[in-house]
Amino acid sequence: VDLSLEWLGMRMASPLYNASGVMCRTREELDAVAGSAAGALITKSCTLTPREGNPEPRYHATALGSINSMGLPNEGYPYYFDYAQQFDYRKPLFVSVSGMSLEDNLFMLADLRDRHLPCLPEINLSCPNLPGKPQLAYDFAATAEALEKISQVYPGAFGVKLPPYFDPVHFAQMAALLNRFEGLRFVTCINSVGNGLLIDLASETTLISPKGGLGGLGGDYVLPTALANVREFARLMPDKHVIGCGGIKSGAEAFMHILCGATAVQIGTCLHEEGVGAFARIQHELAELMAQKGYQCLADFRGRLKTL
Ligand SMILES: C=Cc1c(C(=O)O)[nH]c(=O)[nH]c1=O
Image (cartoon, rainbow, N blue to C red; front, top):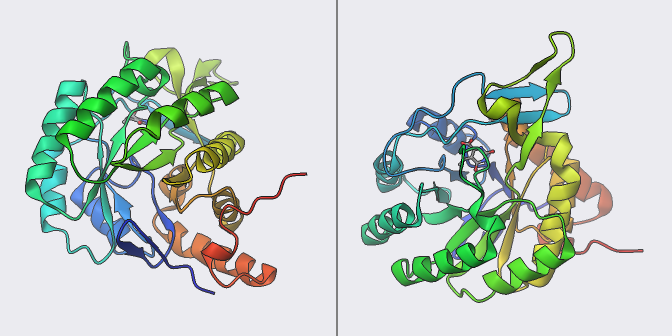
């Protein structure tokens, strides 16, 4: 069974890598992912200057997934761009960019452009946890304006991290918008399902502190929404790649994301809870499942979900 893939001029030995935000804030974490069975790695979304993030507790895992309101804690963009400068590129590296404003994004992307590095930017349009800041990608006009400016500043291939959408009209509107941008070569679906609320029954208290306990959901809670977003955007944007993210904890969910059309898949909550060993485990499970089904490679089943 062959788990390798080639896309946008990059080769990956495995379709699995980390979701931005998990196991990627420090050099040590990034090196751990780079040294694991992961097929690629991506950095924590960065801002112009370092950020502490929201008050703790700001992450909590349950049997069904996770809730987080980290608040974009990161070392500042030079830290990650310097990491990208010294990286050996034995596997693809992506840098996640999530400026606090369009100007900040344009500034960081111009710096990245001028470094002429092999890494690709994944521009985060969907952070749900900045108090007072709505998710950009839920404002279609603002998203169009941002992508116009980004395309003018950044000539290379780039991707965007999208929030989940929940309405066929929104899938269609967003896809039509994104299809206008040639340089936009991939979308990562989905970011956490924003502003959920989890409660500790015994103490009658929220599980996390920021925003009155509201946070982005990951894990089993979000798999159906993630699969729907992957399938819809893969269908509506046949010339772009869709990276699947959301609810992957075994070979089965990785298979489902690829069946929906995902080129590669990112692991968040499961990686946070299990550690980098999750990559080899899930990869093995995926290979087993493919062998049982008689598939030799990912292209044998990618995007082949059948409907009734
Ligand atoms: C970049 C901020 C994000 C964060 C965060 O740092 O709070 N959490 C998420 O689930 N998704 C994000 O995009």
